[in-house]
Length: 158
Image (cartoon, rainbow, N blue to C red; front, side, top):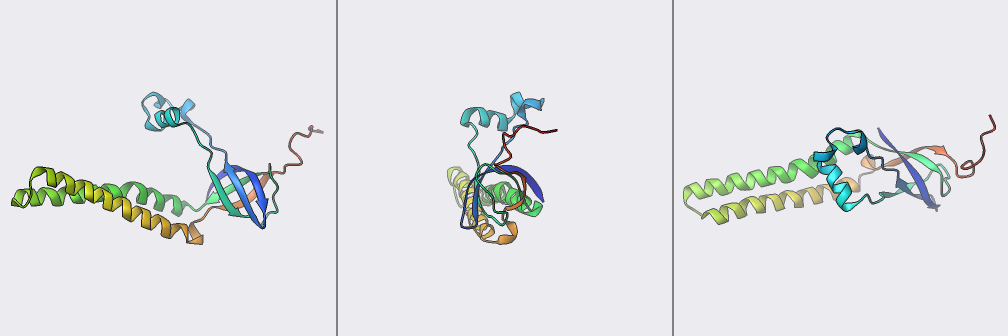
C-alpha cells in the first residue's frame, strides 16, 4: 500500500473529502534545473488534489489522515498513461512506414498514421482508466487518522 497524508476538508453522510498534502522533493534533487516535473511545477503551479473517500473513521474537517492506494493501482495507471499511447504511436508509425514502402501512401499520410496510432492509444487509456475507476480494489482508502482537529493547536503538556 502506498501511503500519503491528507487533510479532511469536509465529512458528511459517510463520505470524506480530503486534500492530499503534496510534498515536493525538487529542492533536494540535484537534477531540478533540468527536470520536467520541476519545470511544470514552476509554470503550472501545484493544484491541490482532492478525493472523495468512504469515511469509516468518523472524521471532522481539519483532521489529518493517511490515505492509501494499492501498489498495483499505481503500476497499472503508469502503464496505461505512458506505455499504451507510446505503443499506439509506434504501432501507427510502423504501419504507416510499411504502407509507405509498399507505395500505398505518401509520407504525410504515413506520419498521420503515427498520430492516429497515438490517438488510439490515448482512447484505450481513457477507456481503461474509466474501467479501473469503477473497480473498488484500485480505489484510494482512508487508512488511519494522524491527528484530530480538536488536538490541533493545543499546547504540549509534556
